[in-house]
Image: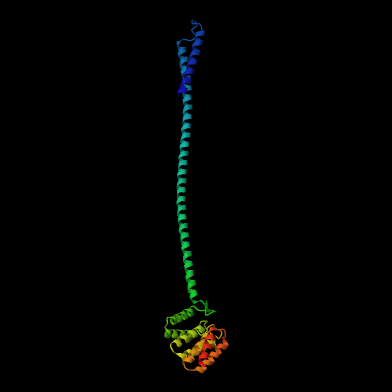
Length: 273
């Protein structure tokens, strides 16, 4: 506005100056411009100035309207942009929350899977252990290797533990029961041997003879067979059947000449003759 009034004043001044110069060039007596004409000229000049001012004000108003509209549009655009940014921020926060929730679910799922795997492993181990209780296992006894059921090993070990206690009566019953229930077991020859020894310790010599013979007959190549033959001869000696004892000792020496039992058999033969 200040610039407008500055230009208007300059324009008015130029018009007045031009008018004054024009009047000065005319003879004073000519009277070309009287007071009325001067007033008209001034009024006309004012009218032009007002028109110019109004046009300039209208132009400035239009510019201001345009500026206000541009500013309003810019404000509205900024407001829309802020709303968009707020919406985007809210969406990002929601995504972060979902991501955190999913991570938590993944971690829980990983823990659940690990726990399930541990339980499956424990269950598999438990099943394997239960299965092993019923599956035959490889056993080494008295220099021989064979497959045996778990209950066979258990019963034989229990009977042998009674023999070593020593509880010969209980051991005799346990070994006899074992032989009755497991006649084809790899433990059976050894069970006959220890049954005969338990009966010999209990002075049940006739029963001992029967079981020593059963052991030798069932497994003549068994590592305990020479000792069983010696036990048989000792039982016969206890029963005063020296003739049968000498025959048993002779058979022992012939069948197992390299055994320690054969050395003992020779000593007993010497004493019996």
